[in-house]
Image (cartoon, rainbow, N blue to C red; front, side, top):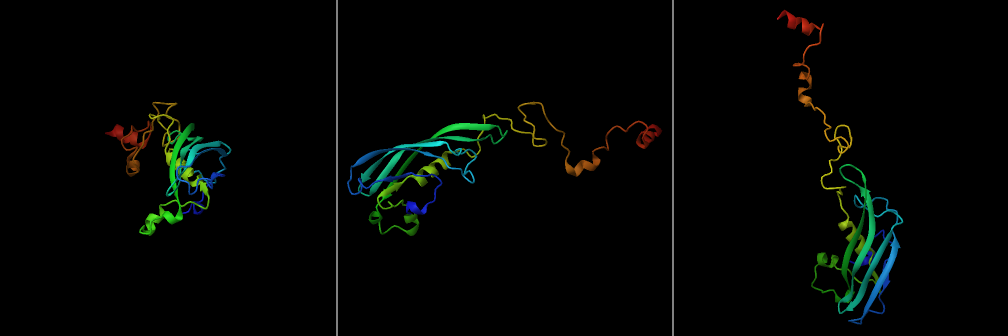
Length: 199
């Protein structure tokens, strides 16, 4: 699967590898900082705020099969607690490792499904955008918590249970709602009270 066929919202993470192609053992360090774009829809509950930096550091190494890329990406995440909805922030670092394979080095006996898993070197450039984007999506929490024992919100009225630890509601099963006042003490002067007095 050529990296040019994989869309990614991360900008400018293509690296020239012309000096490494066909030279097994050749090695070059890489470093770049890009700005996170405004995402139309965040792929996780915590994601990179628009304009925040994504710092990429690693290396490219020429091997017989292609060009190997490895390193780390660091950035800042923001979101909200999945229980109480308080704002959350966190720093994250992810590791990326990928072999960008020369097209002619893909084994002929590979099935179509197996070929889809191969990242093919696109000309003489290595595009780390899709690789780093996928690593960040996998590492970003899908249900972040401000702390493990967060009490969350009241499902009836939405109040923060942390602010009122003893908060609760008497919930009546809808099936028994008609009987709710059956066993209650009758109000003074009511027909029910008169019947009670007769007894």
